[in-house]
Length: 557
Image (cartoon, rainbow, N blue to C red; front, side, top):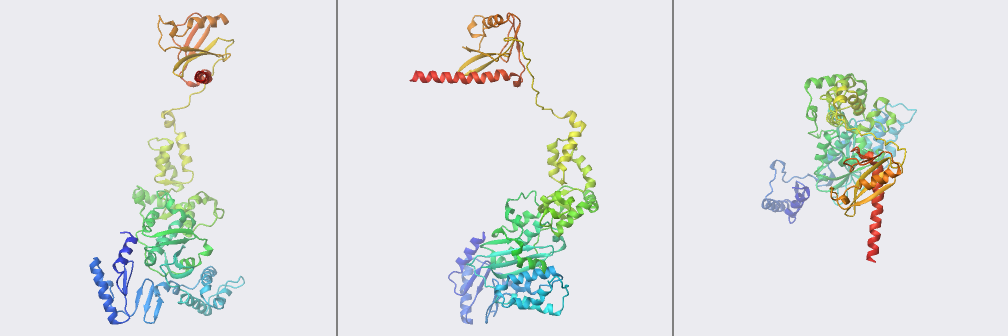
């Protein structure tokens, strides 16, 4: 059942119940007195029974003075934010250097419109950021730090959630952890953060950023499920994540996208300088133990590789200096510009979002990046069976990669003696030049063509390019029907009168015995040899079509 239909059924079931509210799978019954509460509860249970809804008795709490419902703590004194919403801020660790302090103050400044006299409280902390001051944390700084945290967590800075207002989820990921913050009308509703275990710190950058989206959505499930909302991230590739070729992407991305299917969200890019809250939570707060499960990937699930070969790959990858630099960049994060990386890693810059580190191997999507010492052997295995260039490239695309792999495959196949000796040759036939005659009518070319339901014979002189055209009544020849055959007698007489020496005629349709001084030879089947006749056929055909069209127009008039 979809989330919208489920919420509609809940609303329909408890619509007429006084003192009953149901959001997603949470149902709360309230009353001003014990009697009113009991009446509302009895009515709600009756509607629940009629609708066939089953309740989890382990999660049922009856007649409590405080109720944590949908992110709010309802008490006899009024409504307060749930402690879970501000715990991430309360447990922020003190900064260890100027960079972390700058991150914390950026988040506090973002909240300045909700915190009175913020500048006075942050003065001791801001003094540590001066260039001529060494970073030395002391009790006065700790007191100011705790004071600012308390101000951020007070009820005056956290707005109440309103299901009628649009929701924006800010997410960010760092090498240390994930951070997320829920906003309505630019006011914070709740915060959350978690530290990344060692395995997840080795994820590709795009994997960590998308993991932050999954974490934020599942952490604030009760706020976001069943409604549309916007997710803002400082990682621009996530905007087009749904258009990404998931076969070539890191293997976790499809799993994460499946986890986001229950949510109606749109991912939009927000510059990192404006993502101060989520950024601070991801870098400073290792609080939440909420796990995003089922993200582990096994290399042998992606490619077919024996344990011995995998160990060999791991050993050689550990020895390869370039791949170790690449692994360090993947885990620590890439710079903003490709100009800031060493030349050895520049070929990997366009592919940085698809590279990840798994169990000692470096992967590009589902392909293993091969250490330099093993590339020659892998090339020979790819070319095993003496496949052609394209077939070898397809084999490589299924499992292995390194820069210039396709160029090396081309060089290997082109230099293979066996492949060059036995490969199928479909080379283009060379042009066969025609010898230029010494006089007119010495060499002729003949062919047949069809225009307006009539066959024509065309004979072209190679010397002058002059065409001779005769209409044929049919294509059959016979001894008693000289009008239907090629008029060799008259043509021979005409050509011979121009020059009594021997003449030669070539053409696809010229055949039969020679007559007089006219020697008829079949031409090459290569159409390139008949360019003179072909051009004459096109020109003559167009002229005939024009003349026939004019005759028809005159007759009609």
